Image (cartoon, rainbow, N blue to C red; front, side, top):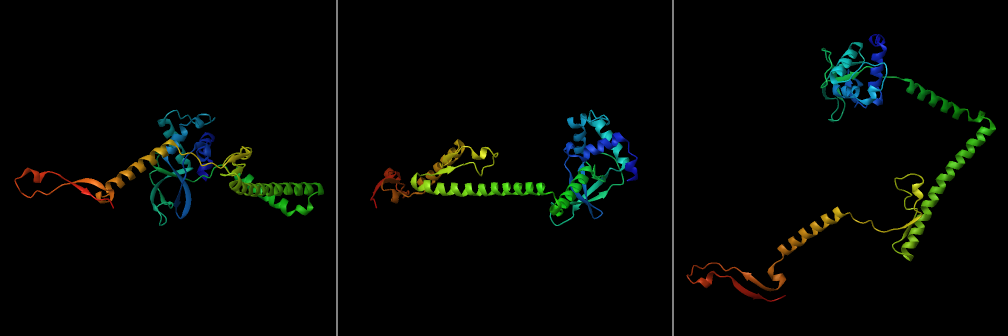
Length: 275
């Protein structure tokens, strides 16, 4: 922590960028000295410094190419925001469990190595979230002390939300009943608000107003695959059928008896009675 406080502002800006979601770095979780820590691969940090998001930052070291990016990232190591680590075996029985990490004595920056974070980044969002949760809890506990007009407004708001939920369930029940009736009266049936449960926006859920319950058409690719399967199946069935089941004439090969007469080697046509 003492080394991090000595870092110049431009270095801190780079570290804050790498620790934020703007860098789009893949963050992994490992186990270092029995504690879970975040770590990343060097090439991910290089890619982040060469991104357009980093080029838009002010008061940061220049990183126009990979060589300059490596120099910037290597200059951050002495301030111990992150350190080079060696990755070992998984900490659990599963291969996807966090892997053991160990700090490497030779500290340098290379794209193929891994680096563990010892800096959590800006905590102002965490502080604001904590303050907001405390404020909501206090407001709920002190509800009896609210002004009458404010309590009346909250009551109307809750009634409105419950009414919307009840209306949604009522529409779902009515459309199901109407569908069952139309199956009997006007097959194949009609759905009211067919997009009600679809993954669309609120307004699109009520468009169109009604729709016939027609089976969806198969795509051309599916039809072609189905045709190929039927063709293979019919070919197999025709190959597996025996002459006795087919009825009519068939050609039977006669074994060579060794006789010198040529007719003994010819095919014999035999009539088979139909079943």
